[in-house]
Length: 210
Ligand SMILES: [Mg+2]
Image (cartoon, rainbow, N blue to C red; front, side):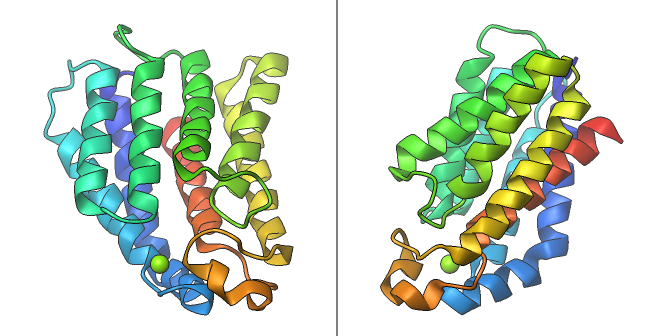
């Protein structure tokens, strides 16, 4: 069972992990983009962390996740900002009316988040974006949950799938976002959005399973 206090811990852990990986994410973005992805992710998750930390622990998960969405979008208006904001709003809708997030709900939230990114970004797997990590990760979490009903097993499966998805982006040619103008030159480089997705999903596991 994950109450709002634990959801706050999830955001704190992700914000801290993004800060740790900020320079690496910027360097990855520098190869195929404008070198700001680590800064954007750190700003977005720090803003979300601060906003949810200011809420009372008795607030419901939907209110907390909608607050995270709004603050993330205010901090990061372009590119990945609206995608993560949509993801958090979908997660919020997923647990509407519930006083706490059950383990099964968290798996459903991951799927809702990934679908939100697909819808908002109008992207599919194979286009060298964060979707290449998020969608297989959320699907792997669902498959594992259906087999084990164990959240930590499911998050471990999500981390493995996210890493595999991120690695796969190195052999993809970008067709979406700023890196699309590089065309074939984007080959051989991992997508920074997929790399930060791995950071976020690993941090979720760390916050909920360690
Ligand atoms: Mg960028």
